[in-house]
Image (cartoon, rainbow, N blue to C red):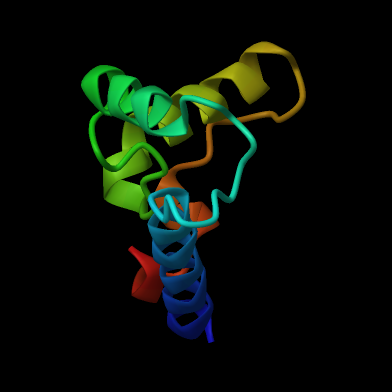
Length: 88
């Protein structure tokens, strides 16, 4: 179930990115959309909506620490505790 959901979201992300580059009918009404996308690539790389635990591990670990620091949880939860192994 988890891998099917992950695959569905990944496919949806790929389709959304492809739509951004369809200049025949822009998905967003930004006059310089392609220029904005190219600038985004320069800053964040081409996979700026990256999915998966490993690629997002630093952000997940920081978030877990912030939750503890703010008193919202008693201990830091690792990504492995949050996500089923099949999704890693």
